[in-house]
Image (cartoon, rainbow, N blue to C red; front, side):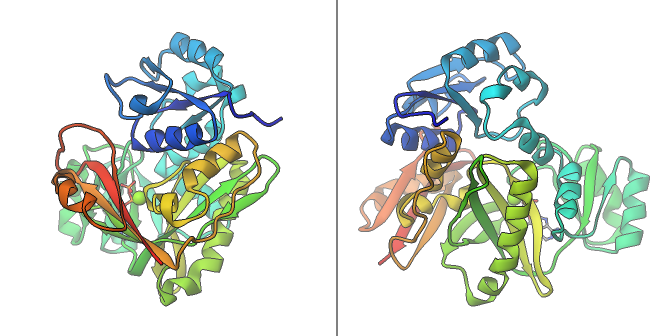
Length: 353
Ligand code: ADP
Ligand code: MG
């Protein structure tokens, strides 16, 4: 049942995750076909084929499906219904996508798996928001149910008087309102799962965010986080299992005083797993290819004693001349053109011997 090297992997979405996936796939002898509505998505630069079409274009998806042996996605906000034309070849399936792309469905799903999330409610009006604020107290964070990423579509309510401005700030969209979690740190569990239930886990990165965007991931995590890893892994595996997920899935956690609290999950390779390219024997990208093509799991051990990954956000990428001159700095530039504020343009990983 395995999809052998020489076959073609279709990738829905043409961003940096697709780009790094295509590079890992190429190492194993696969060709990639990128599907994206953009004019020049950065993944297309390193792929054998590129289809430029809208994600709702069923005819284009069908034609794309005929050219690939297996398909996957690197982007979470794909409309699910048109993907049915690809379903037989699609890993992970649309189930993982459908749950992950609606924050309310996602939180319910996580709770149903027996894992902890911050107290939350679905809201659809200012009256709902005010009600939740009085029930849960502040701080509360509003997050649009759909299309949020890198902290976009979120607004904090630190005082009940801010309910109306926060509701306006997220565009009065259906949302979830959740309690602010007091955490000592954030970390994630990156896991790959195979169709038969086998799985592979890496060391957990400890993640630092600024303005809702990941800035730095460090492995190994601190001792305080390490105490919460076993419980977090159990939660992540329960989620992957319940989804019947095939491929990499990443679950983000808050390390709270009472244990790990799930923030959200992404049904795909993840920024907090980029350190695995140089820092682990098998990267998250290669492992995803192995899982969706049903090759055996690769070794996930650290190659050194640890690694630090720093994102290059916006103008940070202009530091490339200095970075490429540094010994031991693995510089990745995504080829996305001119930097704009808050945009992920590249990253740098340093492996500790
Ligand atoms: P995104 O989809 O944009 O990554 P997240 O829900 O992960 O959205 O939020 C981004 C960041 O905002 C988190 O990594 C965390 O730093 C902060 N954050 C989000 N929700 C909460 C919360 N309930 N309590 C405390 N911090 C939060
Ligand atoms: Mg997040």
